[in-house]
Every structure is written in structure tokens, then in C-alpha cells.
Image 1 (spheres, helix red, strand yellow):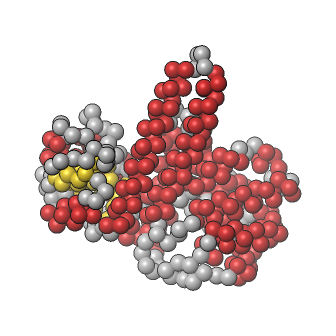
Image 2: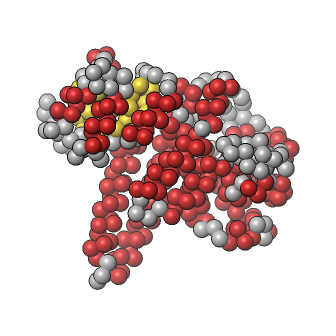
Image 3: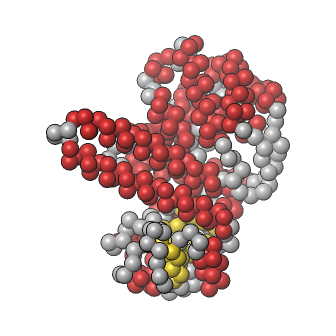
Length: 366
């Protein structure tokens, strides 16, 4: 095979020839694709060629995907990103794969356009991670003598952090096909609430301690835990069963785990602290009926209470496979009925005074 050196290289590993054929056909126009029928062949191929990304089937004879990624991560090729391919709907198996180092799961049979988009997003994340490492190396080298350069590079790192947050959030949106634009809208709603809180002196001490720029960047990751939820549930075209709803609810704790792992690996992880709070607490309810911890009242972090208002409003005014979008006025009535039950009553008084701004934000994003 003659390689185009301007393209990224992908290993597609699957014991099913049909999947290899379909996958290669979907990817060949954009990437150098090498099809391999076993984990052993993948490890052998790595001795001569390092790909930019590996698509790895989980259920294979002799050496399954979990064993293959374990061997991969123990060796010199541990930095290669791996996306698992699976036809199994097994939450425990998916969590095991993520714990072993996989960055995502794609359900089989896969949609070629969705496969291409997911690969594109993950390769962008990897490129930004490499660039961030390079920028940090440069900062350490010039730190003693070139103060001005340090300041410029520090600004670049902040931009890269923001880019990584945005790209990770986009990964979630590409998986959750029904909520396009949700992240941008909720960012706008939170900004409107924070502005009103500062003007009205609402929770003034807590608001004064917040870094608003980081808050608005970090809130993008409130649903990052959905990356660990199978596509079969996440994009189900209808109402979830009680069992499926229990699985969806775990996206809060999965989100916290993912962000904690990022914090452990990052040299500067302060910017992820807000993201962890958003991910874990945005489904808690003022009266204690929420999840995952059933917190009540001020036990719920302020950022979680703010996100709850933004998240629920957006869910009401946007269409879903199991419901039509509610008109703004009806959505506001539903929200206000949750004052003191679902939502912080003080924040709901504030929402009642500025709800037209929520409507304008939703219309602008559309």
C-alpha cells in the first residue's frame, strides 16, 4: 500500500471481514486505512508503523479488545488514541474499556458519516493535546530569560485549554444527536443569570469568588459523562424505560470520574474544578428529589443550581423524539411551578425577572 504522507493513518482492527470492508470504504477517502483481523496482527504492525488512531473491536477470539488495549498501553505506543467498536450493549464492559484507556465507544453497525465525524473530532483533540505539550516545553525553556515570551505563551495555553474544553464538549454533542446547540445555549443562559445576580446582589459573596470566564468555559463539560453511555440508549428514538433512565442518570458520576482523571494527568488542573461541580450536581433538586446524591437546598453547589435552571429550560423549549418543543411562555410556567421543589426559589425569582433573555438567547442560537 502506497501511503499518502499528508493524511492521518488509522488501524481498523476487527475479526469480521464485512466490518473491515465497510469501515475501510467509509474512511479511505480521508485517511490511510490499514485493516487488521486480530489484536495480535495489530501489535505486530505497530513494530513497523505507528497510526494516529486505532479503531478496535471489543469482541474478538483469542485476544479480545480489552487484552489488546492493555498490551498496547503497557508498551511504547501507549499514547495512540483507541476507540472501541462494539455491537454489545454492556455498561460494565464499556466502563472497563474506558478505564483501560479507550477514549470513546462507537456502536456497530456504525453510520459512516457519524464514524467520520467522531474520528475527526478525536484527532483534533489529540492534535491540540500535542500542541499544548509543546507549548509547555517552550515555556519551561524560555522561563528564566524571556519574560515577555512567557506571558505570550501563557495566553496561548489558556486559549488551548478553552479549545480542549470546547472540543470535548463537541464530542458529547456529536454522540447525543438530539441536543445540538445545547452547550452554546446553556452557556448563554448561565451568563445571563450571573449578570443578573451581580446586578441584584444575589448570593453576592459566592458570586464574587467565582472566575466567570472559567465558569463559562467549564460549564460546557456538564454532560461529558454521556460519553460513557451507550449510543443505543443515548440516541433512542423514544421514551426511555425505567432501567434505561437509571443508566442515563449515571452520566453525572461518569462525568465526575472523567474530569478527576483529567485533573490527575494535567500539570495545571484548576480550570477543571468548576467542570467537576457542573458535571456532578446539575441534576440535583432543591427539595432533594434529584440525583446522584439527593442533595437538598444549599447543600447543592451554587453552580449546580444555576445549571439546573439552564438545563431544564433548554430541555423544555427544544424538541425531543418523545415530545415537541414547548413554547417559551408555557416553559416558563412549568419552570416557575418548580420553585422551591426542583429549583432554588431565590434563583427562580431572578429567572422570572429575566426569562425574556433566555428566549432571546435560544432564538439567536437557532
